[in-house]
Length: 149
Image (cartoon, rainbow, N blue to C red; front, side):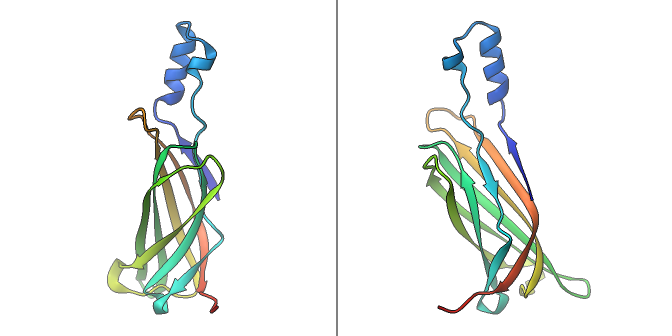
């Protein structure tokens, strides 16, 4: 899986600040956020939903929201799909996990055991400004029956 970060204009603003004589410490940009999909997710309620736990990291004190989408071929020309959302939350500066509930909604087909295409995004906004950063990851993960406790 590949993680892509999008920093808006933060890098450009840092370069402009350095070009026009700002002190390097004053122009230092926040670390880019990262997000990573797991290799698998758990089916819930006979496939009516799935639980996907993503790992992410962002600068301490920033606010985040995240989104995950799943799509899975479940039969001849039939696709189960759905989306889940988490947030707002506060970044700790360390690696964090967030469990997202994805409800099967596309075509009203249930998810099943097997591979699904997944995409997740993380939006992070510093409290003192409106310029936000994003990180995305996409790939294939395996949906499987949740283990009973």
